Image 1 (cartoon, rainbow, N blue to C red):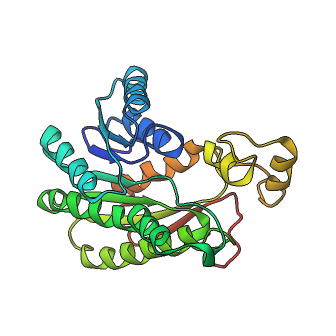
Image 2 (image 1 turned 180 degrees about the horizontal axis):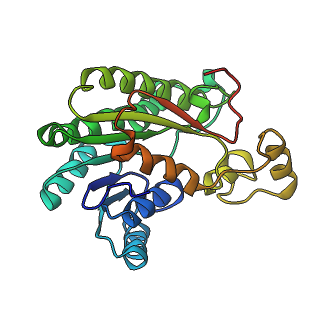
Image 3 (image 1 turned 45 degrees about the horizontal axis):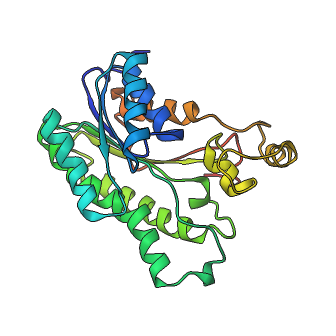
Length: 261
């Protein structure tokens, strides 16, 4: 299927590794020009170069920390100055620390809100005028299954990503007749470095076979998901084929989500 993404301008967060990298790579493979965002310049530039070499697409590195308001403004400004428009915005980043919810002070809550919620608000606010001017756009937020199926010790993420879902649903109603969609994806257990950090030994990418076996027993499909399986849904939601889908919350979790909707 041709996803009709050729010559679209995409801004992808957390793009130097994991799910963000898989999304940037697939959008580039489909012909999009990709502005890739991450905090560390060197691995980000390496990721850009690799995608360009493998796909032939134009990539552009924007080193930035989405937890900072000024950096969010710089991301959209840099993309608009370089390419003249933004068609696709993929809000993706890491996550706040884990811990008992009562253990977090105001500073921790402030940081979580800045990272998970306000980054989405600010980046969307920066990209939306370009989409409205052109009468077309796609916004996709990457959260986690815990946002709709809470897990103990994930409170900072659960609360702030729930805010993202509420924000996105409200915005979808306000821009529904402007050719712009906004949707949220809630990945389950996906094979990235964070999986080991959260559920394994505490070191990115490190999770032993016993831990992996216990984890997969909780997943109806009996396996961990791959970043490309998130990227595939993102690419579809960014395409004209998904033009009638907006305000939705999609869980990609091997059947692990436990409610009816």
